[in-house]
Length: 275
Image (cartoon, rainbow, N blue to C red; front, side, top):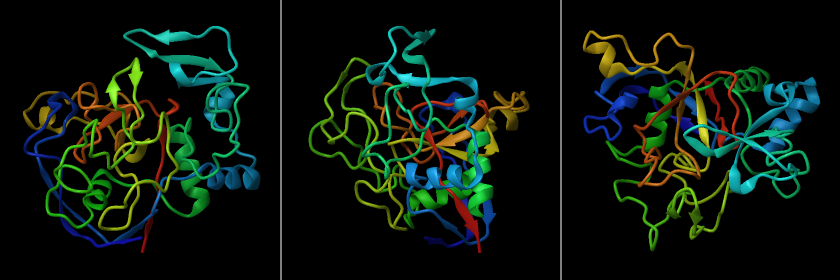
């Protein structure tokens, strides 16, 4: 989908998670580009693997992180301290997303997940594209609106009548009402697209960007930026596990960082292409 260039804003003047570096707003100039209508799907990633023989980092490591309620095919798992809902699952990978006995049956058009930043870059190079910058991602997510909180505008999703994206409903992490129709991931082409015709820019799965994760507000105040220089890469968009009571990071300005070899069941990618 073609996205116009020009002077664009990155970040927000009203950050919700200040330590994440959501602000202050920063003006950047970007060139026009094209962006994938959806995140990369299992079918698309499978074509890449079939053509190149690529082995993902999760496959090489032998495990990946799976949300506890979706674990399949293993008797015991280790949890992340402080976030025990994430389980270290032996045999989980992009093609066995819940554990060694799971498969992609019926999920070819779902986002590929359990891909690291390094995997994402390898796929992008093969596909002739690249990962987006934060400015490109936020500009595209706004869909032509001047300064919306979400890709559809400023109205916040709720657990009753307005559910424009795939996020959590209920009390995280133990009660998911799945009122939006999905307990976990949804197909990549789900819910209404934004003004640029892009699907699921909020929720469903996090999307890797090309950039390091830096907290600009701390850097600009003369202090060492939290996250700068530690190797983490920037992620945008939130996931199906986000909820306003816990992780309100399905807002356009929201952001997160993770190491380039990390893989989880809620992290995927979307490509951009230079014109």
